[in-house]
Amino acid sequence: MTSKPHPDRAKDIIASFQPTRDEKGQERPAKLSDRVYGDIIERILQGEYGEGDRLPSETRLAEMNRVSRPIVREALSRLREDGLVRSQRGAGSYVECRPDRAMLDFAPLDSLADMQRCFEFRAALEGESARLAAQHIGPASLREIERALQRLEECIQAGELGVDADFGFHLAIAKATNNRFFTDTLLSLKPQINFGQNLARNLGLRRPGQHLPEVQQEHVEILQAIREGDPERACHQMRQHIGNSRRRVFEG
Image (tube, rainbow, N blue to C red; front, side, top):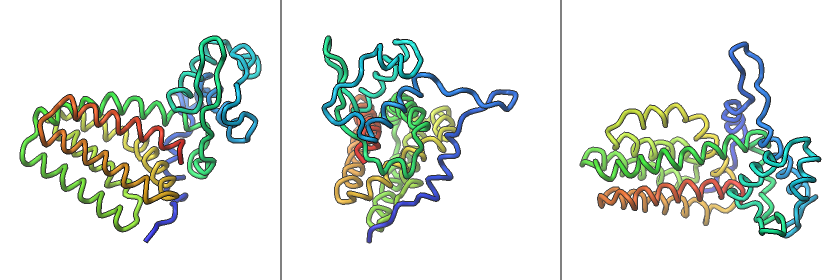
């Protein structure tokens, strides 16, 4: 059985990524590099810049967006990290791949930069979380992580998105650190984390035989490293998993 995407649920989560407000309740302006980032993605999606095409120069992009060149460089750096563009010294930047336009059914362009920052932060936070979990793992904590992984497997077999189960797996690892600050921080990020998980898994339903088993195998490898008490491998597997999750958002 294959589930259909859940746009209504995605829209609820998207609310957490609306422009933030200051202490007076006024919207804070979007970061300039985020605006450039979104503009380039939109032009790629519209076909203005095709795969393999050279992007305008940094100077031209700065003029088009009425920003400085350092702002453009920051946006291009993020696009490179997302695997959307590649840069060659002395030759400029080129479109590496075109994102799946279906992602806009679940995420507005102005939310993507924040979502990608969340992935960056998670890689640092959860990499260390997995490292500490491997160092301090006990029988009770290990059983909790194993149960969380089993719940996730049941969701996959039932053709469900499993966003809550996915978060539960990561939360179980945070709890296994025996440091409540990892758990508290992860819980505080739950709306943003769920946003990325929801988007990736909805897009993954377009190729369920590849996407979800791939994600689950990464979870299995994280668990194995923790079970074997290998802190460095646990950290590496977690950071790699979150980096892959970030890329899968654009692969669709």
